[in-house]
Image 1 (tube, rainbow, N blue to C red):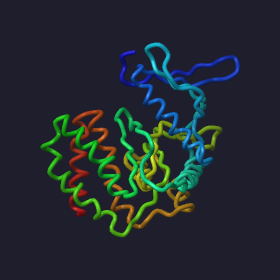
Image 2: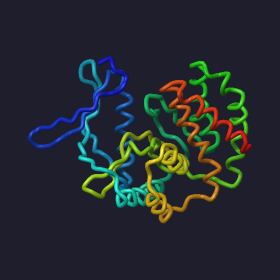
Image 3: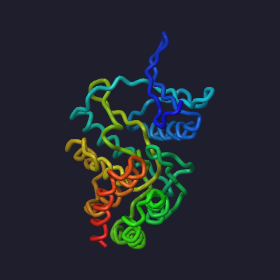
Image 4: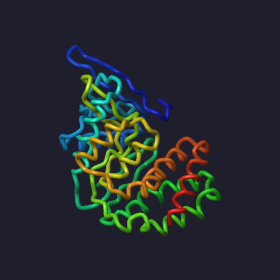
Length: 266
């Protein structure tokens, strides 16, 4: 199959219904990383994720075979439950930021070399790879001077804040969660790593789609730091750069505007 995006299929046997994602043979590492991410979330016993039954190659194609979940519309109740469950998931912590494997954020490789210093990790494993990719695509003039200034001064955003390495979904926009059995939340398509939990919360605000009940219930389990607003744009800059690199110049103005806002905070 020549398509860059995997093909999603619903398939069934006499005993069960499955969700099958099929891509080119080059997608196998991406599917393996997706399976590992779903497993890590499932092991927390917090938010439901689709169970993975098999992942690998079949001829010229790669595939991941998962549980099919018949999802309905997101509801106030499921948003409330998601907030509480996500906060509980974020309480799964470790000693370093990152992950012991590379994975993908959309179609872009996401590097996860482990670091004990969050600022170093976020600079070297998140912003810098996206910026270098953007420069290679012709956006150097628009971004490099201000971005270099930002990278050299990231400590400003963390003067009174020291995050712990929490397990993150990593790509938590409204299209990556749903509701099943009328009220239970489910999350999928993760880009997991251990990082600042605020990065997940910031992503929920980037494109909208999360209710006030979600934020209130999250904070009832683990309140958000008062300085979150200072770092929200910093965390979403990573995702907007990723969209610039995947979808092209339609995201350049948003990237430049976010960068300008961040420079004003230095």
